[in-house]
Image (cartoon, rainbow, N blue to C red; front, side, top):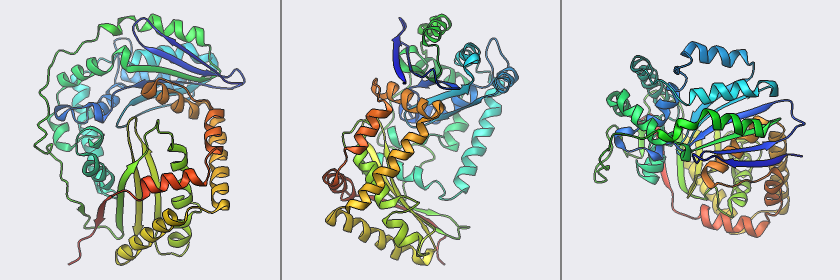
Length: 414
């Protein structure tokens, strides 16, 4: 059976693992409290920019060495940045544990070369432009900016073209020294892991990390202004769009809320893309291409998203359909067979995902970083099984009946 283990090093860096000697692989990840909500206006986009730069070489390895060694280990590796964290991870065979620990830990001490910085700046500017050209044309970012304000949780993970253009390598280095300190980092591992060996290796290789200290003091954001490059209009122009895109955002539970499991099941019943009330009324009937909803959980709060894609002439009628479907669920509750189906589907999804150490890694690492605790798969399954119709009703009344903001992306009618 999987066993949870934890160690806190003298530097404050935490090492956690869910070990299972039956696994054929092991996964390792560095979870860093460096996300867009940790940035100020002059740092906007730096968490994501820095994620790119961490693959560009160290004192011991060139960028080519980093990528070659990742390929040599024959596993899977990647990184991502969100509002609350940046994560670097890899999955390899257990015999390569020492090598992947050495490689990922070395990557956590990057050179941050000025030449590579300029090259990667162009890559990110292209990424921003490409993202804004694709449906729903920055609609989710606009929803977050309007709902949470364009700072904190509402700050764009990629930053804006203006903030990236204005960024300097020196500011990035200082941001690295500020955020990539031991107390802001969790090392997580899952699968067939030698935990004692992992802790010993990490402790040896990270002794100097406590010496990281930022040198620049930045001014507080002027909250009476809107950050450069940001607009808060609820209508987005999409001249070439053949479809219309609508996003509604309202309150949702945090990742530590007692009703988060009920809310996840509520989303499955109301807007699951494979068989839900929205699916049968809007997708199966051909009224819409996409009609779905989901909660997005953060450490201290959350959001509830509703997303609709359909022909422009059907937009308003479909939005009324969604409003009526939602109102009906709030007023009448859920049927026993709906709840039973949602529970069974969710349980199966959790169990199948847990079969891979790489999938468990994100749950273990994120939970340790954000809440400093652990939830086993069995604990999660028990929470799902415990959800009843009354819990669904409470979640529906709290989140579906709360005020929302609506963002529309569509071609302007002439």
